[in-house]
Image: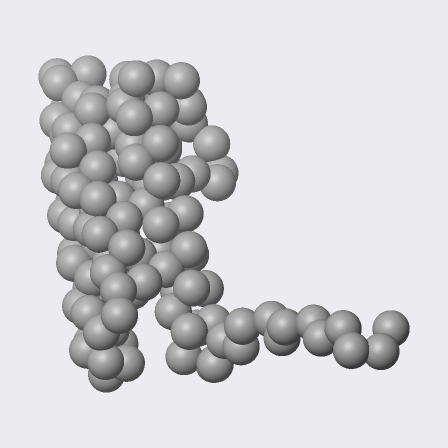
Length: 134
């Protein structure tokens, strides 16, 4: 095929590929966290060994499990939203150091909300157990 030229596919450098991977992982994590927060707070996901707030207090009874997840729903959803926003921000055309700092900060916010949800959820489970013991 003389004279026919095929254009080259656009080249993506390592920064672009890294941003896409980090962005997609953070977005997927956000969707997963929000979905699990809703499912555990509604009772669709009961006590288990894989997902949810798994402390001795929350695992003690189905009622304690549900109370914990109802109380933890809002902060856990905020954690998922933080992850979604962080993932979307990773895809913006900003300097790489800015994106890196943003991803670390966003992940920190996400973790802080998850920890807060776990603390308030465990407290709710303990309240149920104390009431049952009384």
